Image (tube, rainbow, N blue to C red; front, side):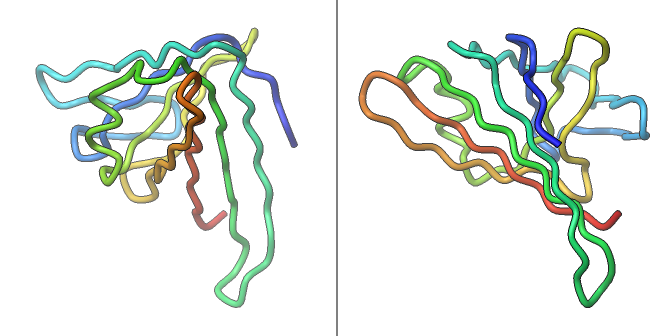
Length: 122
């Protein structure tokens, strides 16, 4: 399944999550979602596969921003994140406190391409 996401992507560092449920994420006091200003609609994909340990879900989000736009996330690429995104009908999260997203960054000096990936059991 591949979906086109609205021009909205927010993130928090996984260690700042107090409680996470299937429908909501509660953050530690004083923590708020950080907005990643994307140039184009991010692309979300989700694939399931069978592994020796059971079914696995792999989610990936790719987003493009102007180069150098988010210094906080760039300085903390080693920290896992949880994303909050919106379609025209719903808000959903990618990653959890137990299975957060890893972050990869590439760029050409004009644009940065962010790739967020998480793998979890189904």
